[in-house]
Image (cartoon, rainbow, N blue to C red):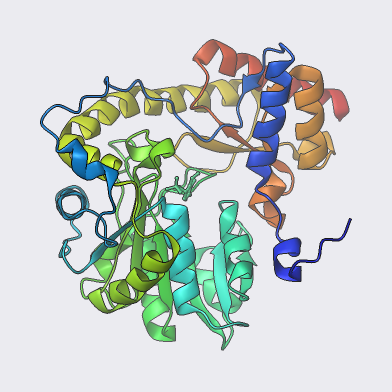
Length: 383
Ligand code: PMP
């Protein structure tokens, strides 16, 4: 049925990852035991809720549309101490209901209809559709292109580059050299950079994370977006934020006011009150998760499974090229026949159409090993 609604909304696709996860829930309801490699969460054990010493009565009401002042202070202090990006919590930080919302608000603020926005593949599922929702054009850059060759993809209408560092889904952590080259290009061509740093804490000690914000101390062109969804394991609390120049924050504030008013006040209070404790709680679980990542690299190597290079996050882009199947056909039959859920690479860009995105966050090693084996068997069975 064609609904009497705008063609733009009609033309938008739901995220492929969500589609696959819904199917997993259906199969689980039927009693099937699914090895879940599609869920984009790490499932930390959380300390019991503790509202002691908090003014919970305030939590029933709206808070500042910039985000609760105490929460902005801890977020600002953390970016300065952990990543060397200082900010004024009063004027350069805005807290929103999840980082997804503020990526959209930022795009909406900076583009005019018909502008181009560069997206580097493999690219997280929502960038392309959010750009379209702003009536702008996503310019998808294949994963084989390096930062040095990016300029060839720019047009006179290019307004911004979306950077996802570390990258979901490959796990690539951008080096200082790559970030400097990107900043150099942005300066030369007058572009904005939206740096989505949702996985900034998911990097091993030998390859530390650098925020591109350190190369733009005047915050002239950089929007640093981050989230507590992954770093603290609180995806359901919907708290994300942006650090940017005060002039841009004032504009984003208007969008925040009209779209969400403020994030859930009680949760903001809770986070401000327990921030250090929650950071410690996450840190102790990120260490074994990254060890599991290193184990997974070896386990896949032993099976001859190839994946894009990367050492951060808890995701991999695994090649199924040798199967001869498209990623969608492969993922679909892997789920229905082998009960292993993954996300087809095509959701992350055309250049990764013969990869699968897998997440190692939700399953223990034994079950991951079974999942890897099923992928390997299916590649060989079809080829
Ligand atoms: N960016 C990336 C790269 C992500 O993977 C996600 C969540 N999967 C988000 C942003 C959105 O996070 P939030 O929960 O803060 O909206």
